[in-house]
Length: 207
Image: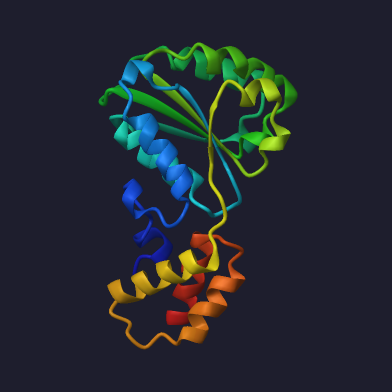
């Protein structure tokens, strides 16, 4: 079975991220800093399927985080205070392989009010070699105190021009020369600005 296109063409460097020039420029600017001057709590916000966790993974790699030191949580399954306290204790341990450890909390708006309260000290006083990445489609559900402790990376839905360019590039990479313009336009207008959904649609059309 061939690899799904949305996995095969998931960006692994900032230059490959479709659209979102503002978010990419902000990230590049932050990465130019010395590690000691880098913000340790980042909030990646934006619509579903627009590249929040993809960009977060790229940033982790750029910071020198190894795969084994990249820890991802689904926030819907770890909403309580005890989970936050457990992470606080584990974060004090040194990275196993890379220079830093990165904790990624996906859909962090699912945290309870108590969990958000417990996270404040964690986000503000991160160890020097630990980074906390929060990703959410609903940043307005987070307490202001949580948001203000993070550097915000706003990831936006793509316009149809950027989606169309992405589809054409993938078609070229796949050796597909006869994809009708009408199909490309239909995908670009039907994916709600999500490159992930657009590539999934393209995969379905190719099949």
